[in-house]
Length: 425
Image (tube, rainbow, N blue to C red; front, side):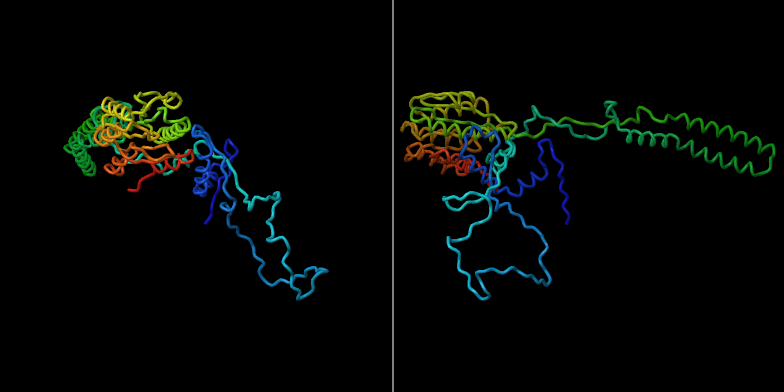
């Protein structure tokens, strides 16, 4: 089998074809390197590329070369220390070292790495590989903004720019054949009779008959020629109709606790989770709305900037955010037209009498209308009443309601992948 490799350089002095082949071949190693990079860098920098490194042993390739083959006779130089049959002692200092020009180290075994840069597009592709919004359902054709034209056959009337020449000429030919069929039949008979008369003797009766036949032939030919080559009746036009293009509408509700019990480190982790989620949604779905709701004792719908960076303190009443989500869903996002998703971040601290209300709101008012709801609890402490209330919701709505705990920043990406991993059919 022969392989043809395009080694022409693109604008950045790299071979695009070979690079894509390299990324696909070492996808597993690069995904692991990207996952490690996520734990080291800020989520706010996710839209930039990344320098990643993979062990050289993972990119080693087999090579073909000529073996020694045949019979060979070699003469090796002798030495002053050993004679034939002597046993050679093992050298002092343990195992022999490998080749290379690297400096010595006292930190154990080392390993060379192959380092290269991933572009923003490549980094995001590996970052969000195998992720999706679970239970995505197309509820209806949302054709108010996106349409496509479809061929609807041939019509007799239409725009001159859409005339179908082949069908028009075919119709014109059929019409001419139909209208001239009788005249052509009589013309053929008259020509045959005239030819027979001309082959006989030229008597006065035959000459008169031949003259009549010539006049009839001229009339018939004139009649046939007067039939128009093409008529407006023959014109045919391509017909196109405008039909709505199927598209799925989705909305994502992001709920975050900003009460006083959420210290700055917890808020930063919540912000990172939602930033990662927001970036994922905007990348994967062209038609999706995102609603940001912050809450302490009361809830407020805010813009992206205020949601991520505004600072507030106060008590905690989680049900206020769930009530606002319910109201916004009823006012702007009817469940028969939108695929609704929710994600909530909290430290689990809540007014004890409010947790049963949160469970009731989720089970009765929100979960029947949403496709998926994810809850993350950012705390190293033991779970409180809110977590246990949500566990009851999870048991009631398996596969639709998911919950995970985050203790440190390194847990954000693994938890995110767990919540939004692609479910097998």
